[in-house]
Length: 94
Length: 475
Image (tube, rainbow over all chains, first blue to last red):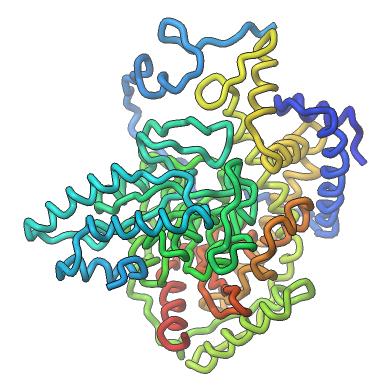
């Protein structure tokens, strides 16, 4: 079973705030799902290349033209929760 | 004339013959939604005003006597992970509860240019994560055939809307079965196109190497009509592909077809009542002249665990963007930016979404990458090779869509692994990127059972033809 500390570490990596009782729940749930993944150890994967993408597409290019992006005052900026003078505003990082 | 049980083709014909107007057609659907949506809850939002104004414009166009395309005035429903400019797009999540889409998805742009009318946005499992539509932050959709049961997921709202005559067709998205399973559970037709056949621009990203948009319809012909319009390479989605040969001229008579039946899809775990309907469908194909061949996909049992590593890994990366800074929910409490992240995600995401973010983050974290993600990707290669080998000797494969009948609401929600097993016959297809059609094949009592017809990459038209053989000669 994965430890409480591991669950807390993963949650922090994911920036996901968990309640205390959730940490216990995830210890149990994640462990049983990870146990299920053990099944893959039965497969011989020696010399097998990984597939990241099912349909092979390589080097998709477009013309190298600059496009003037109009972000300030656009619909995208209207969606931002906090702005100041046309910039996104965030809390201090520490 | 009953206006809400027509196919696209029938409604188009009737509009042409002026049997009713586009406004009358759309009003009939809005009325049906008013009657039924309360109990089925297929729609999250219905855009009544814009439906009526659009329909009037279309009637104007039709009255001028000009030629109009087959989707003109046809009312459709759109899964709430596909962006329509100016409308809310929630992904059935609290984190996007008030998000207004700032642009159109490419599929929407294409449907708009054909003058389809969007009735509204349909319910789903939050961020399309789930197999029952119970994971919606706004409440579950019910199966129109039995309101105590799930419609399947994640495109449960889109499938239920078509099944309950609340739309002529709908769009869904399919990452591991999310079009095919609800189509099967609701007794309608659903197509998951080849990865890259339809642009994903404007689809809220879930697992980017697996996601595809596709149609849910009443007939195979309708499915083809919608696919014809939404498909094609798009400069805004660099993974979209214009296949060299995907023409309509693949029509084979049933007697020229070799249909493979993978033996691994009929092992323990399948409901015997489901198996009976699927076996009967296979027998019927044989009756109309198709050659049935038993084949083997030896890595089948490893596809599901590989999928449930790759899927949450990609999801955890994609969902990192919901940080309370750029758009969506933002909980501005606490002392610093870290608190904003923790609280926004902590309050905004529902249970299954959190679970997948945790799983994916774990699988990608330092020290575990090779044991989980890389191993899963290697297994993915083996699953792909299985299919390539089998497709050397068959035109298509025929399988069940799910081992189960539509199950009771609440039956599987507490046990994530039992819910994941619902997808056991559909996830391989996304790992390999193949096209697959989900087709109603019969019923057990009131509950629909679907069959899945899987094709080679970019052979959508062939599997659609095979589906038509079933509809025309068998049903």
